[in-house]
Image 1 (cartoon, helix red, strand yellow):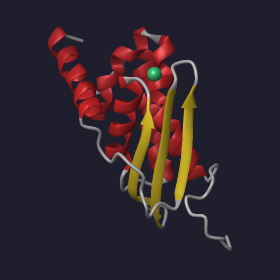
Image 2: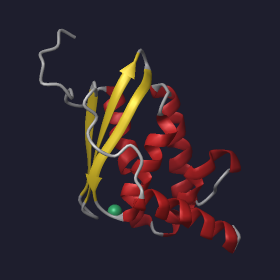
Image 3: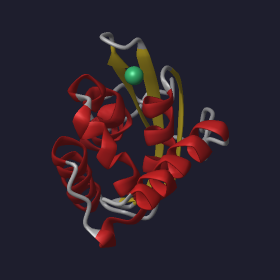
Image 4: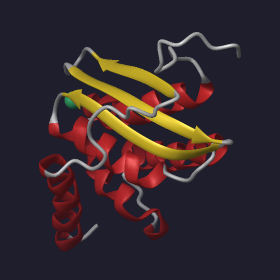
Length: 151
Ligand code: ZN
């Protein structure tokens, strides 16, 4: 990867860290999952409203290092409108990027995190939000509502 590209990708991370997208609780959420990365002290909650099997709305909330928060922010922009299967596919592509540093052009902004592969301890930071959204989609999570649900 050229120096220019590295700079550009770092810019994506800095931008998402400075201006997180879809941040805050989602009042209409039907699913919520919490992710915790104790080795770095990162926390991330992901709120999802499903419309059928697609993500109609998503938000995240949390605290931690720039990598974890920027990655969660970027994740929310990538998975909206997607099904659980599609989100899993994106996660697999992202996981490949952060563990190998290989960044296919078609993966777009997710490639911003390719540099993480040089810092194995930070891979859990980068994937925290993704684990949370997958858990939310799999239903391995407490319902976001306190109402009693028949299903
Ligand atoms: Zn971290």
